[in-house]
Amino acid sequence: MKQKKFLLPESEIPTHYFNIQAVMPNKPMPFLHPATRQPLKPEDLYPIFCKECADQELNQKDAWIPIPEEVRQQYASYRCTPLVRAYELEKALGTPAHIYFKNESVSPAGSHKLNSALAQAYYAKEQGVTNLTTETGAGQWGGALSYATKKFGIDCAVYMVKVSYEQKPYRRSIMQTFGAAITPSPSMSTRAGKDILTRNPNDRGSLGCAISEAIELAVSTPNCKYALGSVLNHVCMHQTVIGLEAEKQMELAGEYPDIVIACFGGGSNFSGIAFPFMRHNILDGKKTRFIAAEPYSCPKLTRGKFEYDFGDEAGMTPLLPMFTLGHSFKPASIHAGGLRYHGAGVILSQLMKDGYMEAVDIEQMDSFKAGVLFAQTEGIIPAPESCHAIAATITEALKCKETGEAKTILFNLSGHGFVDMGAYDSYFSGEMQNYHVSDEDLARFIKSADDLNK
Image 1 (cartoon, rainbow, N blue to C red):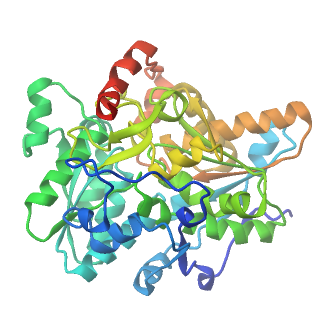
Image 2: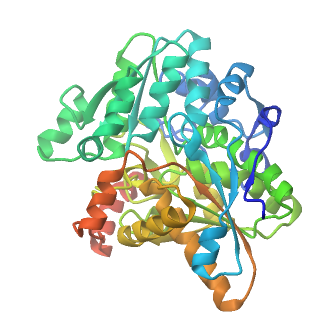
């Protein structure tokens, strides 16, 4: 019998996170203070983030950051996660490609998000913080942070994008089970939310809006800090446990990836699987391709613009140099709520600009078609976000079928879809539709970022 699953012992859980900033030929441009427009210092972030996270955010010197032993002990409940050879998917496609996936759906939260949530909750506890606030799109990050804060004895408040709050009730239930307080965003509980609802009482929310509300609550509440689930440098770095494990597992399989693929919202799961392998492209001359799969309706990498922009809708964050659709961008109500974000992470934007990675946009209907095929062949129902990575993987595998090349493809299964079955119901019933954004609408939204750069 062919070996299908490649596992590592608990002792192989990484001891350090990989900080790709330290090896990048072109360092990311500095964050800018929103008031002074001067480069940010770590202490400028201390009012919002835990000190350790703020220090990690702007660290461009140290390639390896130790993982606290308490965090590694928590990781041991689900790491190392399996690397799986997708033989049945290969057979269904009739491709000579070798397809592997890293299965992050086995975490207690059902996704990769727990890798950073546990770290951020630990750093908060060590600092004496008693409350964390955050936002969540589809609910994976909110569920992960709710679990992590419960483990470390911290209270958690989550602003959930309203469209996902309504689409995904069981995501809310997961957060409530772990003791978090959930508020649909935009809400009337913050000035940012009130302003948005005043402009549009029927606003169904965005990640940018939910971030504004969570930050406002954090800075106005004693002994409270804000935690983010994607985009920022320290979050992407925490996720590199995925790729560091995958490196060793690919060695067990006797292969090395020609192509690495992940879905892309703000960039955390893509960073996690890609950065450890990408360092070999940078340092050792490897030629692996890295493909980010984003929604066609939220195309910040494929149709966005690289410039300074806010990370949130209300303009409370630092100015970030990134590929953006404009902080006022209103994404369509697709079921992949975790990918409905207007900007790409700063590190990822620089790597994209420098040609180390590429991007494709995936129609919603195509993503679910791919997800259903994956479920039927590999037995795991993927999260709507992960369906985008699967769709991109299938495209590359079919190219191999045309050329006869037996390339090795690795993708990140960032989470399962067991609490997203309402989205699959929409697909099977024929109610689901694709959403397109015109060049004219994009230009109008991007202008909100253009105006900041004048």
